[in-house]
Image 1 (cartoon, rainbow, N blue to C red):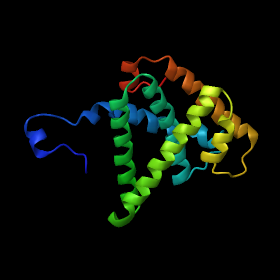
Image 2: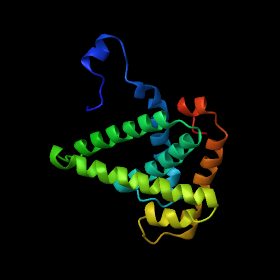
Image 3: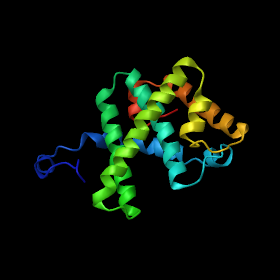
Length: 174
C-alpha cells in the first residue's frame, strides 16, 4: 500500500486521514452496485460496467465536494478510489509492471467523466449523451434504460445538493 501510514505515524498514534472518508467511499461503491442500474438501466453487469457506474456516482460526489470547497477531502476520496482500483486489478491478476498504466487510464476516465457530467449538470442538457458515450461506451441501449439512469443520477444530484459538507463527508449521499 503506497499511501499507508508510516511506521512512525502508527507508533505515534497518527492515523491515515483518508480513513475518515471510508464511509463516503463505501456509500459511493454501494450505490454503484445497486441492481436497478443493471436491471432497469441496462448498464452492463461486467467489471467494466460496474467500474463505469461507480465512476458516475463518484463523479457526482466529487463535483459536489468541489462546490463545497472540500479540495483536500476530494483528493483523499480519490486516493481511496485509486487504492481500491489498484487492489481490484491485482486481484484480477494484473501484474506490477502494468497496474500503474491501468490505474492511470482509470484516473483519466474519472477526470473525463467529471468534466462531461459537470457540463451536463450545469447546463441541464446532454447528460443522456454523456451517459451513452461514457457509461454505455457507445453500445445500443434502449432509450428507457438511459432515461432510467439519467433520472436516477439527476435525482441523486439533487439530493447531494441538499446535504451539508459534514453529512456528505460522513458518508451520506442522499
